[in-house]
Amino acid sequence: MASPSPKSPEQSEKTRKYDRQLRLWGDHGQAELEAAQVCLINATGLGTEILKSLVLPGVGGFTIVDGKVVMPEDIGCNFFLDLECVGKPRAQIATQLLLELNPDVRGSYVDETVEQLLENSPDYFNNFSVVIGTSLTEKTLLLLSRKLWELDIPFIACRSYGFIGYARLQISEHTIVETHPDNQMSDLRLDKPFSSIKEHVESIDLDKMDLKEHAHVPYLVILFKVLDAWKEAHDGRLPKTYAEKTDFQEMIRSRMLRDEQGNLEVEENFEEAVRAVNSAVVPTGIPPQVKEILEDDACINLTSQSKPFWIMANALRDFVKNEGDGCLPLRGSLPDMTAETSSYIALQQIYLNQAAKDAEVVFRRVQQLLRQLNLSSDTISEKDVKQFCKHSSSLFVLRGTSIADEYDPKTDIAEKIAMNVEYPESGMVHYVMLRGVDRFQAEYNTYPGVFDDQVEPDIVKFKACIAKLLSEWGCGPLSKDDYVHEICRYGGAELHSVSAFMGGCVAQETIKLITRQYKPLNNTFIYDGITSNTTTFTL
Image (tube, rainbow, N blue to C red; front, side, top):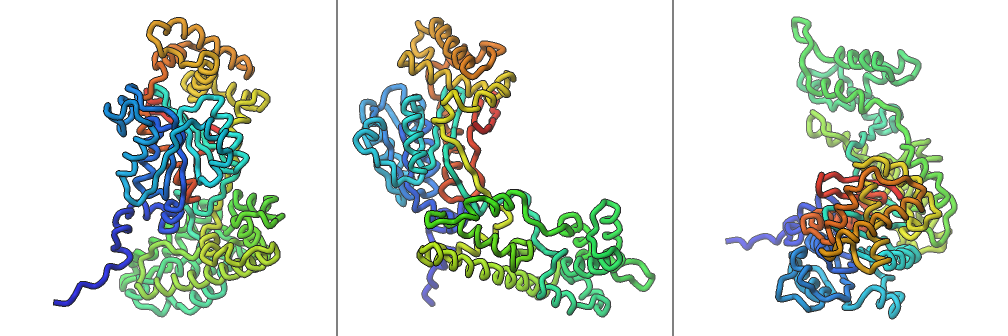
């Protein structure tokens, strides 16, 4: 019996283990995830749920900073703890149990409060990819916000409070190449054909084909052929209006072959061409958000401190002005078509070759820029440039705001709150409640409603906190007090069902930041566990 052949890379244990997520962010995204180091502050029920959803897909490593011991109330909201853990360091127990989920992940813990850590080791957070804080007091939150904003490290502050979930992303600048848009238009260049596709289309004569050959011509070739005829009759214009596109579709149908009785044959490739008119026969242009990136000061005025994204953007800008003739590099991918395999592959190869040529031009320009900036030539690889060019039509830059600035009453946050808080069902009301909880905790060193015999007095105190906040923001009173009573009824409790939902959401946003794929939230997320509604808004 012959010995079994070695496993291919596609069949490796690692590939099988992470198969589903590799389909989402690819090998390069997985490599970024496995190189990341995440810091979690406070191993609450929410905190451990977030780490669970990062450990399972294989984050490189994590560190838990938590100076508390496990209390009986932790057991009810944290599935990673049991009664035997009571009295033990919460960070240590959570770390041990989380590491059991995935042997590929490294984990450690620091058994002291974040305030002590910042005082004793002010540079502690310098090397983390992302820092996540749960159930932070206002004082600690602002301290961390300022420190991480200064270090330019992404920070996610989140909370699970009764039936309310909250997450706030703080990031100075986040650049994304692979945004994975839901409905991306094909890049076919029907209105601006490049030389090699022109030659290929001209070499095909539809009139000399039999029915079998005719019915297997890729619909893209049909569109090019008919569009040439249309432009000759319309001064070089594309069909724009509904009536013009209808006429153009009829021109396509008229090119179908006829049987002996003179009836049109039903050819699927021609019908595909008709259906593709609205999506494919469009002017080739640069999306507005990409134009903004190419005109951004960070793109135009490069320095030795410029990020690779902006260096590639500058090279892309140069390409658009010169070789690209006002267009971005060709993406190089084609949609599926009814065609002979050889015909489709030949067409696909033409697009791939042109995309490679465009990317090569951009890469040469990138190398020139690196030399001018006195940076190493391997700072940006050819693979990076190809990826950048392939996704150049969906580039995205997110510039955020500091949480500490959000808490400054002099900012324009008051206007944003006033616009939304008038509506009782708005998620902004929950945001106001949580800010009131912070204010209450700062003044009374406890949360409203924690002690059963103090619920009624706490309601009065909490109303006063909310009224004071609204007054500072220049807002009128809330339309009803139901939310105030509900917050006091929670008594600072954390519900595992809410934490589990929020844990998945925050872990997802963390992975977006680490892999630099998909657009992260901007910047505040509220979950109402009673109605199961979510709200996002920018503060």
